[in-house]
Image (cartoon, rainbow, N blue to C red; front, side):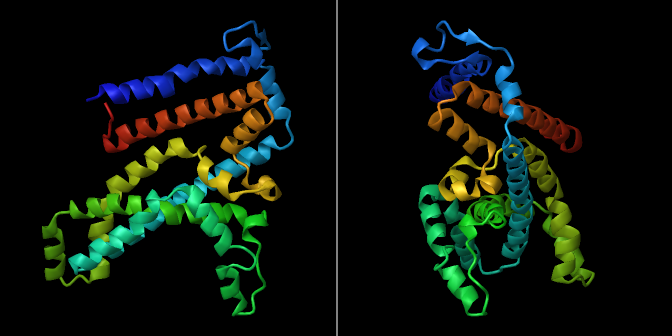
Length: 285
């Protein structure tokens, strides 16, 4: 049963690693990957850090990814606590299903919806107009676009995290709640002193494991939402690699950026799992 998965990983994850040598070459596609290419050492990396916009790309990636990680911890926890307080089972299951559904929608579909909703004449600006607020060009404003990316990704994905935290709450010993009720603790006190502490190991574990995604700001989402007018605040490492490598055919430079990102991710993921093991005794193998 493992063979198809292993073959897929080898074909699409490990074999393509050979392409990382392009980062150290003045790559000419006509000569082939293992052809007579000109080796230039670290020149692509030196050129990368001399680009005037690379620091904006790094800043945008860290800001958007960090914002998503923070909200994707806070929002699912809040909703898990709310769902836990719903005593009608059918209503609780219905709410879980509704908030989980956007997780399965493609960003190609959602981008079209958000472009319509957040346009100058869209529903959201029409609503703001009822209060005398001037229309905001969310998709074309460098101040607003990063927040649009963070909030829309949170809306799409928080349902998945909510399920994890709801499962964590169900593992809390029911006798603790019964003892708290006998002592006269309100529902808020039970949430504060029983539910949240019971969820803390999972919260800490999810936070530590998420460290590896600090340089992953969401390629699919940004590519479908942004435009040249918001490159300054919305361009991230993945979209930069796509534009430079595929659209501008600077294969060596794009590979250098991707390799640097992968090395940083490896360090962060290793650190996250090390801390998860030391603090929570969590281990994959």
